[in-house]
Image (tube, rainbow, N blue to C red):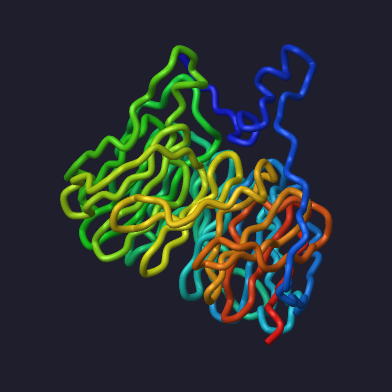
Length: 383
């Protein structure tokens, strides 16, 4: 049976039942609360990238390379912005319908599409120069990872491919069975020494030899349970993180876990549901749960330092860390700032009125956010 791929936001909003009943059973977003001793925030600059409607994807995160920020929309239009002044420098039309953000390194950008296109471009003066393009037989909803001479591409058909960065030729390929139902998204692979580590829709985290694709270890993060296919969703879709040889990974309707990178041994796990990326500092993991509660979790034990539910059901993005604070964006175009130490809400500013799907970028002392209509903005706390 062909896999049915459905957006996480649809599940979380209850739209599966709404399709048959005609009603929206989604939980009402929490009302905004008053902030005492509010942090003063200033908008450094705003750029309207004139993007196509990006609501088709929650993965179109901008890419930062040096003092340039690159964004792509669902029509395949790339805009280059000066990160210091917010000046739009150039636009390039790839004509590739992107549903994942750009990846890149040095003077190279990689673009993927919902049609399975993978294209490499070289940054050159006031634009891009096409280098090569190939097509695979699947959608690509995870940002590819560049590492040395490899381009690692995870696609929705359960495959992980290693391609040559020189010409796009395939070096190796591995495949996992995709469940009947899964979220429309995939986690990015992670490179650690001679390993490529990937998460899959069946709740498995698997490490492969980066040179030949041989399996080195396999770890079960979450086990599907429940009677319905929706109840059995345990996708590993968020961007997991590596710190001091330990991988931290979360699954939808499953668990949050710490795994030894060299062996796959499970150090600890706890019940947790998230399809978002994880932010990390020296002590804690910061996560947006599926219900938009914000958590700080002890890296050593998995116990909670704090939980903040003031943005419950506001469809917040993955968190980012800036100084001693954590920042998220929400469904109404607000950026919210919290203390890292105790989770107290200390600041709020509105950027436009549209939802942001992507984890904010951090550039020095500023937060850069992009909404679904292509409004790119930089915000800083006032000294």
